[in-house]
Amino acid sequence: CAPQSITVSSDTVIIDVRTADEFNSGHLQGAINLDVQSVYFDELAAELPVDGDYIVYCRSGNRSAAAIDRLEALGFTSLTDAGGLQSAADATGLEIVI
Image 1 (cartoon, rainbow, N blue to C red):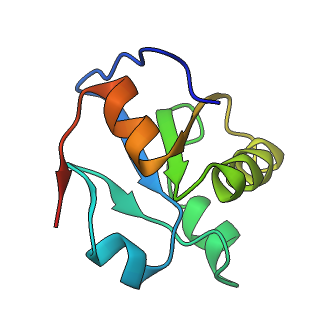
Image 2: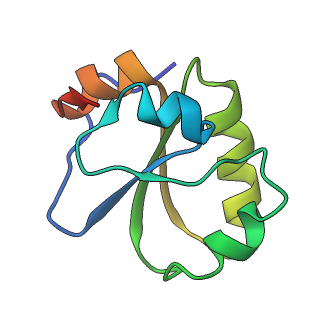
Image 3: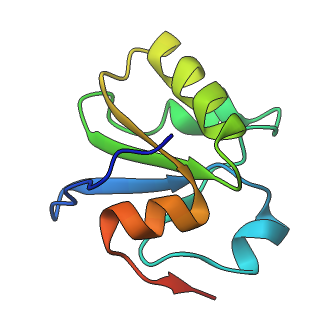
C-alpha cells in the first residue's frame, strides 16, 4: 500500500512500469515508461543513474514491487513504491495525463 504522501522534488524521476499501451492510456505527469515485463527492462534501467531518486508505480502495485526488487538488484538505492496509478497520483499530487 502506497505511503500517504510522497514528496516529489525537481530531481525525482517517476517511473511507470506498465506496458506502453497502459502508459499511453494515462500516466503521471512527467513519468517515463519502463515496462517491467519487457526483456529490455534491466538494460534500459541500467542507463539511469543508480544514485537518482525514483518513484515507481504500475496499475495495482504488483509490478511496481517487482520493479523495485529488480532495480535494487541493479544497485539503485533511493526507490519509493507508490503502488498503483491512482494511489501514486494521490500520494504525489501529480496529475494523470494522456
